[in-house]
Length: 462
Image 1: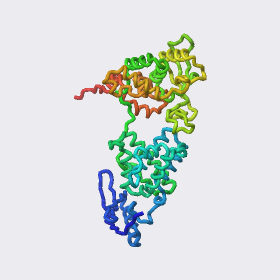
Image 2: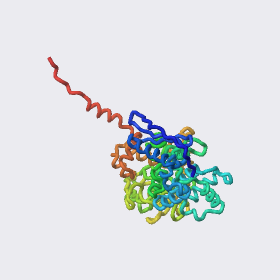
Image 3: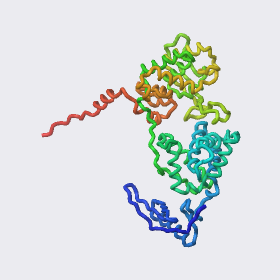
């Protein structure tokens, strides 16, 4: 660790802003300026006194952290790569597959940013792949091939220590890397926010295990782009567009009728795609034979998100989970429109499905693959929509069928609490996502406001 005795400590600088006043302690080490802001003068005075005392004792200051050696935590004895592997293993057993994958991506980006030197003997893409797919993957690390092991050993030797997180300038460099794509452009706001959240958890883990004294990523540090959970109204389908898309899917030679029933379930009942692929025939409650003009009921109790075989405990492509945001054994019953009643009855009969079978199967009876679903929907949009519509957000994702259904329920006047129950959301989340899409009620609202705003007639005064 590099140190210096060339220390200069300046007086406290006071900044009076509109919201609050801050007090900054400033000092320089070998010509490089450091500063530490505090909310009160007393705290700033105390910290400055510690720095002055260290210089009087003849104590060396770290060029990495800017602090006296006596202030150092155990961070300098821990390699960042070793810590990141330890953190990934700790998270593996408490998180789901997609979270594991996102953790690996965030740690990979941070590790590349913390290398002492760029890789000369390896391609950058191979380094990123080795870190993401093996180093931070608890299940696959032991089966890494020799060429990957060579990369990981080089990374371990060339990664900085955890003391680097005590250097604000280096922290800002890592945050910049987390918010930037490989081509140098800004990453999506949702990705930046997710990466920051994962890294924040890692820093809290370091503090808990006494590797760092404090979390170097408090709220408000760095520029975090704002994200919106609201649905883009341009992505919603009107009935005519939905009918054309689903009709094209039904006429598709390979698996068309099966996929038509799948998409119709999303459009009429609004579940998440991972909930639909997990449905069994027994989860559909159809009215008596011949009563296809009546509503059916759909029971949802399990989800099977597709996360990839590298990120599940058993090596399967899907990971069985409970309903999102619910207790492990919770269920949800959703009414199905009479049109869906006819579609599902025809689907079950046509494929000779039994109560114990999956409702929507692949060609060999396996769980319906996400790639098949997405490919069919993408083909339907390309064939049915105009070039302008295809290039727009209109129904761009399969998930937009769910958004269309829930928006339609709200616009039809179904109470938000009931829609939230059917959708598996809380009311605040539902309104945050769909409030901007509620329309068609303005005329009635105007009448109500007009009726309540008339002033009473007052008697004339002499």
